[in-house]
Length: 115
Length: 108
Image 1 (cartoon, rainbow over the protein chains, first blue to last red):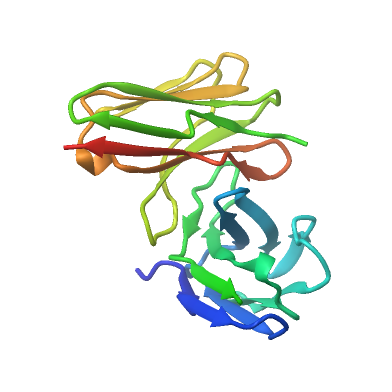
Image 2 (spheres, helix red, strand yellow):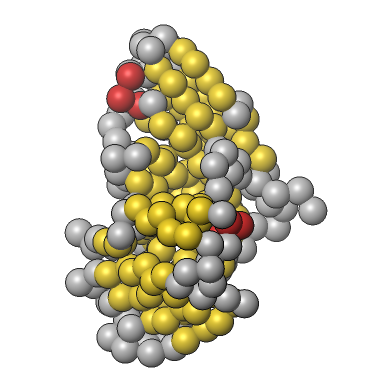
């Protein structure tokens, strides 16, 4: 079975540009999570969905960040406009149950560099 | 705000040595997970502990959940270069949070 698939793997952009990160969760998983990882702050939960519905977006840094899940097999995380401090590795993860009892399956991440 | 503090942040030891890394919090967690992350990849689950005092073994790795379910430890016996990586603990009270991890490097 394919794991969680993220694209792009790497993105370099200039400050002010729009960035869209994409995620395809594992088929049959009903939870989807977006995390951001930096050396300083570690792995931070941004938002998670259950059955395509956003449940908790309290980790989204500010209004420049938005996430959608139009169907069970696709999610996007958009940053508009991007800033240098958004540079990080963004991970998508999916789970068949709530993450407190179920294993989180992570994608390989999207490394974002904002110049 | 629930925090998971992991220690040490960095650890570099010789192959064959034993080591223990820690995950501590002031909060109680219903369960705690340990993940390992290698460069350029996402974290991969090693184990989930649920019961206070629980001990789980995975080959040379021994995981323990504290009696009060606020802390956990990971002990590696006879470390090998393949154990190198970032070890993350993750706990849930009302949502999943991760510690910043222990970056382990095993020297051959």
